[in-house]
Length: 295
Image (cartoon, rainbow, N blue to C red; front, top):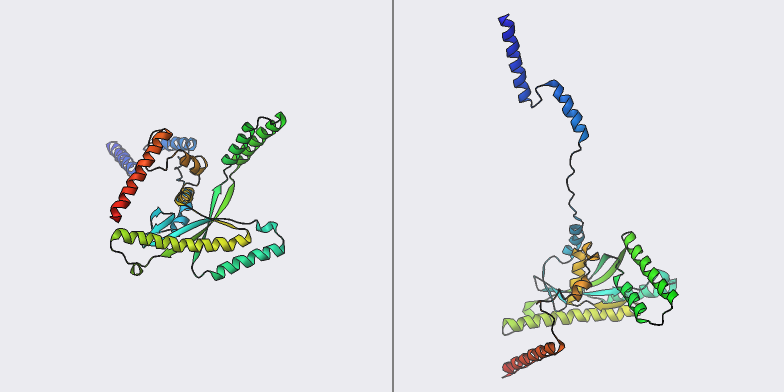
């Protein structure tokens, strides 16, 4: 009897040790309960990181890989390469007949053949924003005191339809841009100091790039395509939409500009007299600085 009890106790000890090593429940019926409980709970899904903004901006990073600064209406790179951008308002090609389309093709091909320098085309898709057109409609309705009641109600309904149309699903518009690049060779520039060298570098780059832009403007005008140079703020707007494509729907670039959030200094509201006085002081300081240089 003692031998039987000894064998039973040893077997129990070995069983408990084996279950602990295998990390399984010691009591077999507990395994069924845990499986039942697991059926009632689903594993938590990990948050998927939204990398859409990074993917959208990747193309722009490849377009301008080494940006040093944006100034003087140009993008400056680390190797003294400068880029200028222009927005192109294209003609509605597919509404024209074969003869008109052929004329546009001839103008574009001629411009491409005559250009002895490289240029790039950048297309940027943006969410359609009807905020400004809606504001214009509302302003026209409010300013017109003789507007009939039916016309006023029609305008209100049209504004509601435009807002619903914009919110119903994502809608896009494509902006077209031309980009010219020009690299400055420092060996071709002579200057007495670094300040003069910097001025000559910027002047030479801007003059050359502006010449190329105006050539494109005059040539493409024949095909009813309008080419407008982007200022420093215009380039900033393109950058803003490239890196904030989804956020730009609510946080509009025009609103940021109107609120003067692009200013270098934050100041309180001032009267027109005070602003004029400050401008006068600035002009006087500039004139004194010019006199000191000439003397």
